[in-house]
Length: 276
Image 1 (cartoon, one colour):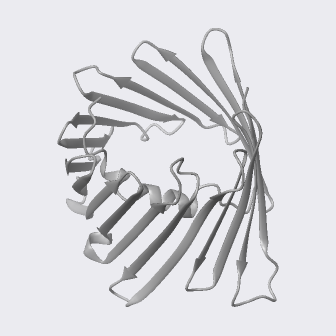
Image 2: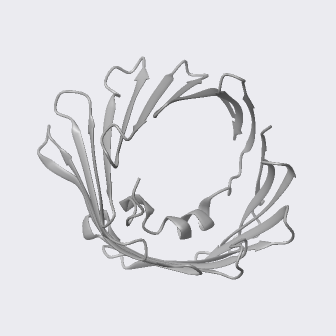
């Protein structure tokens, strides 16, 4: 694949991941195994509130194709097949759920040194169609996306964004919700290994004139342990500690506190992911 501007979904993704990834208030356990034939198997158990759920995911790679099958406790089977380089600089992704016969979806991605284009459509009569396009370079890119419902003949979304990426920092602005909101974010790495960083995000919704300001950070205590924290102007404070107990195996403890309602109990979550 080319080293062009990336996907539209990549605009603002690094800042978003630092502020959201691994934060949870649930109990989650997963274990992964790999067979000699190249099949990866991951079993996951989740407790969310009083609800328990589990799933098993298998992945198999063959030449330029990757097959993913996920079976959950609701007897739903999700199958995703990803093909790379069917044509030069292209990727195709097909997915469907059983027993939901109307869940089929096909997406095609095209990567160029100065442009990336994707098109996705549901495999049914009167499908939803999503199209994105990004122009630029790995340093600066401009992108837009649109969704169209062929049954109602209306646009379900249209958004635009710009991203600037440097070795030690990245910034983005996204005009979303059909022009009804704007989000600006900035992330700055504090060390060469990029294991410590600071991030800020401002989100404004024009219809209500509401602003949400969030700041956060990531700090590596040592090569095995990192801590993260975030706080927004609504008083929501989140923090987590992540430790690598074995190579590629992580235990994560996180919590969330409403600093404007300290009489409420904090919410806690723990996640354990074991890999060989």
